[in-house]
Image (cartoon, rainbow, N blue to C red; front, side, top):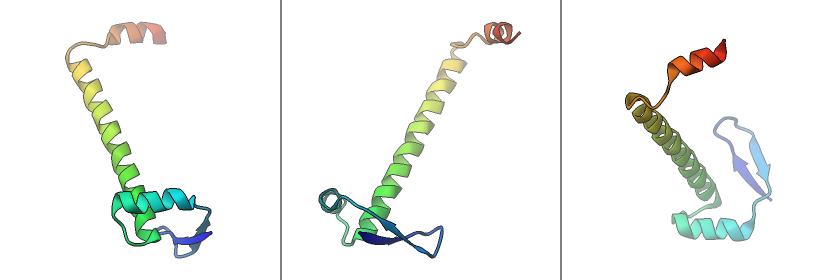
Length: 79
């Protein structure tokens, strides 16, 4: 079990990490320490999530701009 310090709290976090996966991630990410690997993997996961949400919102905006939503029908359904 590894100790991972959280930036939210000064208390260390004990987490059970798959050592084989951690080793593979370390190689894939080119990081030097377990802490760096975990932090980089978390950063990439958050960045990827933000990008997917941004892309989804842009897609919805394009659909709305092209008249793809019948807002009058939605109003009718809400009654």
